[in-house]
Length: 175
Length: 372
Image 1 (cartoon, rainbow over the protein chains, first blue to last red):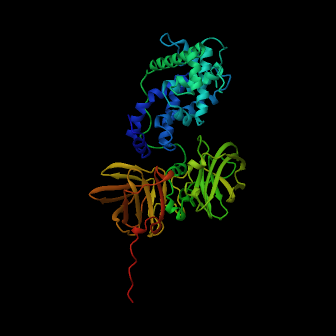
Image 2 (image 1 turned 90 degrees about the horizontal axis):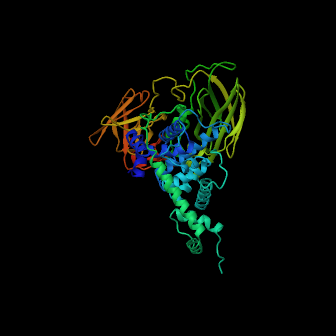
Image 3 (image 1 turned 45 degrees about the vertical axis):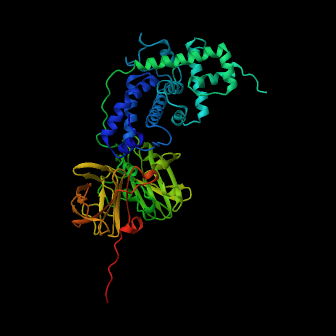
């Protein structure tokens, strides 16, 4: 566990050791988040590296009054992933290099269904359900009011539930 | 009388309930008595649990190493300088901040129009008639250049980006902002302000003039030339290694304490021109360091040898390493203020220069009395 203010002070001052330790602590979950957001392992790894190098090179913008360092990190990664999606042409198939996340027997139908949700809804549900981000933190990450977080979470859950129950036709897994 | 809610109205509150939020009592009552809403709540909770289960399976391969040994970017020296060259409020009025951009007779090769030069040297002149320069390497992605500093009575932020190039014709993206000196906004001019501004597109022919209107400031005239490289050191009126008289010149400083690096201001540069001035370096973990060619109250005398300044404070040995010779003199004065705390967006560190009397009046030595 890290004290956000102290850690940020060290990172801002160029303490590579502190940054490396923070990376080791946070990167596995960030990579999982990005993998489920992009559906591609190489893309997730690239975006994860871009996220951390971006922070290392430009250690600005984190405000401890507005949320935790981890929430801020996931917010930056979400924006990187959104940018990645924007650069994918609508006609592009998902990367078919054997790296696309396989839905194995140990995973589930819900996981498959989850990947068919729009990217924004996937990000929101993941941050809430897996990362346990509060409404206030999600409001900062998404840059929306808390009331909007609640309504978007509801919409995302309904979309997932509809597809899960087979009550609605599957949407493409594109933003 | 409150209307009894329907399932459609209650559904959003079912979602909130699944998140551990409290909800209005009428919806809580409805959900408690409604099998459909309870089924929805059950689904939401089950979906969340399933997602967490899937996530728990997803902790596989080892992490790649990050290239973070040095805080180095592939952007321009000027851009890197921008990030660390912050402006202490007290010093702002005196700031000569366009330091990095003010190149003059540098030894780069101007390759002229219709050539294969890939670096665009932009020269921009404000209403005050003072010209500034910066460089964009068009072969690199996202390589902006610009300035934060004073133009006439305004604190100005200007940022340029080459969006596309067709021979000498380029599409130039410009972000600009100006605030009158003395306003609170002027004290916080920096990349955090300029980065959020809309980018205005201009069609610009290298070799011809372009006029850009900056709100509240006036017209900035821009010209460009192709060059063969981005100069390593930008410095006003000086293109050699020998510092000027009474000058203290600090380029990309690294601060060591007992042989350990305790502060890095990579890419930022500044210098003084008179003994009454000081280079001001602020590292958040160290405090504020004033380095001057003239003595200051409470300062220690330091050895200035080529590109390093060595001194001792309270038994600790410090060295400031910089990218070029520091001073003509072999002695400079260093004042460390460990309790100094920067405010606002200067908290991450800054490098600038200022009159000592303005930023640290307590450090000004009394003038010797001349007996007649």
